[in-house]
Length: 172
Length: 365
Image (tube, each protein chain N blue to C red):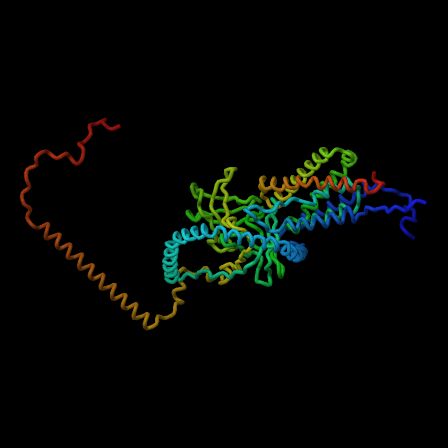
């Protein structure tokens, strides 16, 4: 008689809720007003990792809704126009969802190139929207100062994809 | 009857399509939010922002506390090791500042006398509220901070915020215990300023970089590298004369301002509970003739009246003495001129003419 094997179910709590909560916590942590030797903490757009990884893990109705909430929270925390980051994150989610069949199973380098392209698109969108609303273009150097730390978050997105991609046999 | 037991039992929609529809609907909602949100106090979502900030503020304060303790510890250690050099620097600064202090006292005295003589109503002293920065936003699209003082402490929207070096920003949102400060470097920040040397006016516009731009400068040479930039007080949003920074050329050739507030950490700040001077008195009073306030002066006391009479008598005496001296001098000069002069010796040689002779026609260039 075979012994029953414990089957671990990877549900939305594991790959949506917990990463979203961690994202919020790290965002608030990095917003701490620290200044050492004239340097501040980096301020990447951490939900960008989720906007890239979630559609590759599996399509879901919950993920875009949580992503919208994360974007709205980011708008309030950063005192940005309400809806700015939510719209940008949804755009990235849509782009990755549309290219899902191409990206699944690709090498890490290809994924990083796609992630970099998505980040560029996201910040370009945000730049245009803020310029339109404030009628004052933000500094390009300051923009690069936020793009670079966001790009450096790619290993977390890659790790999430590897961790949860095969979590549900229905999506293999 | 459950939904899946009905006629739609066998309908299967790909999950990608349902996710895509969700994305489209959420994006439409976001666009509507963007259009309707004016990011101002009149924004319909201001209560939501205030509610989230009221929760996030204390959380950020908890995160900031260990960092602050670490900063204090490093300051303590640094102060221990660098006490001698710090002492020398402070002594040097003190020696440099003492003449400035004397000049400031003298100028303050003279200024107060002028204000009294002209009947000027100076702006009342501005009350301050000390606050601590508990949450920081540093991206290119927004530069803002949460402060741990709110409307319960008298903070209002529009109040300027300074640190020990200069202007930091202004309040753009308040809740009872938390307020939101927009930094002068934010892309939405525009502040009327003046150049201290020339009194030229400009607008200081933030763009997300550490050094905001000076725009709408008029006149040639109205600003130079190193000029001090102060708030002009135009529009009544800020008091006049708050130090902001020094002018500098940016790498793109535009005029920018190196902020004084960047000289130290923006951890503890002071909110100026500033009311526009124009709001404190009626508009008709502002339109009154310049010396109309002289009529409101109180009657002089007997001591003041005797002092005034004494000063006037001394002034009259001094004037009479000066007149006498002047007339004596004039008489002595006239007597000297009337006395016969001894014959002058013949000149050894002809003196050169004081004026050149008339040039021949056509000799000019």
